[in-house]
Length: 350
Ligand code: NAD
Ligand code: IPM
Ligand code: MN
Image (tube, rainbow, N blue to C red; front, side, top):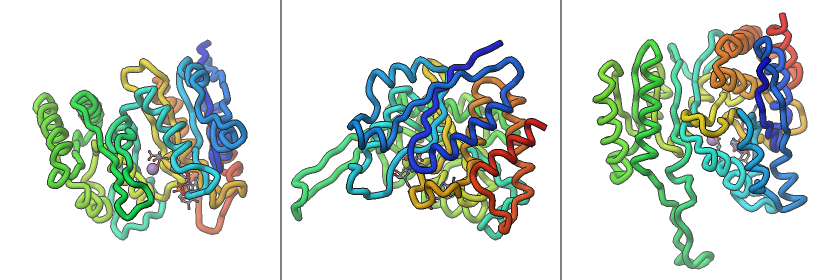
């Protein structure tokens, strides 16, 4: 029997609610002989507010010693006076992504049959966003001058390194190569962000030359938003920077049945650290505590987790069960968070 060391970070708001359902499903979907040994970490707003700790180094070291991580969501109410802005987002979530070198933030977007889309003509939507996960405007480079005065200046510098861009572009080409359509679109803003844009474009072109079997395309980020809403079937794999990828994937989620369905993986393809799987959504303070959250995104994140571990059949069992569950959902059959988890788990258990 194989034991997988799983670090679980339920986090804040609806994080613990959806994580409980994801674990329920993971338990029943795990392949015979595979056991998940869980360690739970009570990181998040509560711990910060009672102890001042966000992610102690000793805890990070322990987490690093796991095979894989499942995270719910972190963060409080936007602009809560008790929580300094970004303290959990930067100090916990981004610190994990950066320290564990999760340079591929994988965010599939698929419109499942029967799932309503706000788009009039969605067509076949099935693409994956390969979002750079360790650089861009997220690195905390920048600062402020003369805060609170009329002469205040604030900068957030986007950091793009040849190493960082090339490795994520290579990963995106490799993923495109494994998909039937073999198409990769770079999304950036090379017409304005000329420094970073030039680096991305040159490396994209250079790696493209090594992959003649992959069709390539380029869109500026603003036009990409048009196509995402008018003609999303043109996308197969999208590679983009950290901030553009963040924004693209919330729109993509909204277009494919809502943020409650969108799963993600923060992957280190070199496998030198544990990769981390989490729903795209946040802690949703507006609905937390009411068991109204859709756990499907967290559940589908466990399918990505199983895929990452090489358990492709188990991952497919989860996707099939979710798909079956989705086809039976209607606007007037509202279920609680655990009811959705139970229904999906029951389908897998058979
Ligand atoms: P959010 O994703 O938490 O919520 C946006 C909207 O989507 C809300 O109306 C919410 O009710 C709804 N929603 C989200 N998940 C849902 C689900 N599973 N089922 C049904 N509805 C769902 O984004 P926000 O409101 O901008 O941010 C809230 C907090 O979460 C902030 O502190 C933010 O920093 C944090 N955040 C964390 C993550 C993460 O942990 N990965 C991601 C995004 C935001
Ligand atoms: C996400 C979130 C995070 C991001 C925040 C909370 C740091 O929005 O996972 O999409 O911007 O990456
Ligand atoms: Mn986001």
